[in-house]
Figure 1 (spheres, rainbow, N blue to C red):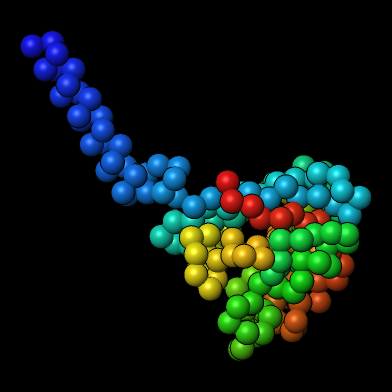
Figure 2: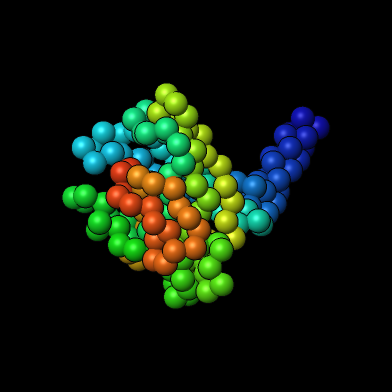
Length: 179
């Protein structure tokens, strides 16, 4: 009786793992990514996490230090290269060829995001969801062959001026990597 019960529990455990895997309940079934955010001197100033669900890609970023207080533009850029001065990240991620900005009739870019607000002490917490990108593949995947980067700019995004919303210099960036 005891051997039969142990076998039944083992079978039920295996079935539960198979169901969770098929439904995306395991770490393998849910695409995720991370980015270590660095300033122009290469110092780590924060991090970002990306996860995909039925609503799109959820982006959570934490800035631990070093940014000027106020609003700053934050965008996903088209390449996973931030050397030497973040310019290698290319332009905003824009596979559809749209113009920049939520308020632009021909916009937005897939990589356009809402501004990040930095507190007086130079820290920030950021959370947004976008349905214009994926982690799981296809034309709008952030994890395609040349990858992508998350970039924070010196000024706030005006949400309409093409090509970059008047955001100024790139001051923090991180390569988005599958996790």
